[in-house]
Every structure is written in structure tokens, then in C-alpha cells.
Length: 214
Image 1 (cartoon, one colour):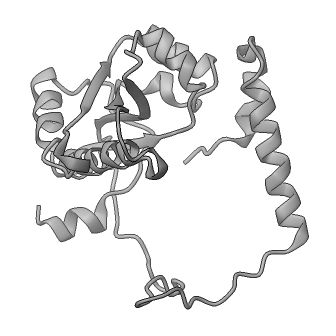
Image 2 (cartoon, one colour; image 1 turned 120 degrees about the vertical axis):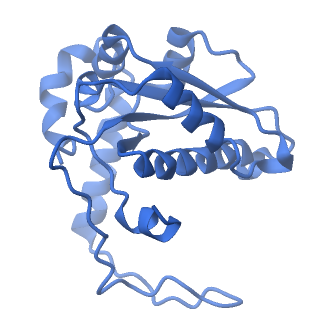
């Protein structure tokens, strides 16, 4: 698969074959993904491959996306947070670079994936998985073989807004009505309060309707 084809046809998927991706392939994909750029060439990636259903279930029960327990496996991406440039969070940018490479490489091998930041609070994730304090859990990526007949198609970019400027910001102001602004604030507040609750597993059935299902 040519790079441009991979870029155009890779799409997020949340349903996979039950057959897990072999460890040898997972390690190959993660190894190659670390060819991504990293701030100051620190290469501070650490990956926790999650295969046990009870681990995936823990993520779900403590506030992650509802489809996670059905995924055959996932990888928790962590990165060395010892940086002199905390103002720009360069460690998170470095972690993200490898995730992008991983998803493209996986797609080339017939493996779909979903980049997830809808996760329990970082401190809880750190404690549960025993992550060293010098490393920050950045995102979770579920992955698995595409289902039979599952087709990914190029994203339709027709009608897209202008996204490129030269030398300085010269984009048209975005008009946002008061109602949508208030709705956004309400969702943000509800999310904050939800993750303060110690027994949020009890609220999963109410939270489900607000999650993406495709």
C-alpha cells in the first residue's frame, strides 16, 4: 500500500475480528512506529500491550469508551515526561507522533485501530498499570483485524473550510451561537463531575448514550 493510499483510506474503527493480532506483529508495528520524530530525539516511548479482558473491562468500568471490552487488544502509550519544555507539552506531541505512525502501519497490514483519549483520570490509570512517575500515559489505541467485508473509504474533503494560512492568522471569525456554547460548557462540567465520582461504574448505563457508537 502506498503512503498516500494509507492516508486516504485509514479510518477509525471500533469493531474487530475476535482473532487477536500475534505478538510478533504487534511488536513489529510498535518498533517501526518509533521511527517517528520525538522532541530532542529522546525517543521516550513505552508501550503497555493490554490483552486480558479484565484489564480492558477495568478501563470501561472506570470511565472509558463503551466498546473497549469488546476489543481483542489495546496498547497504552506512555512517554517520558522529563522535559525542559513543559510549556508546549513536547512529550505528548512525541507520543502522538508514534501513534500516528502505528495506525498507518497497522492499516497497511489489514489492522484497524481507534485512538482513545476518553479514559479514566491519569492518576488512576498510572496506579492501576503501575506506571513510573517519570512517564505519562498519553492515550489508548485499540486495534484488531478488520472484520470480513469491512471497507474503509477515502474521507470526503469536499466542502472543507480553508485550513491553511501564510505568515499569519487570517482566517474568518467562527460564528458560534450562545446555545451551542452553553451546551459545550454543560458537557464539560458534567464530564468533570463524572470523573470525580469514585463509583462511576454505577453510572455507566447513563453515560452510554453520550458516547460514539460508529
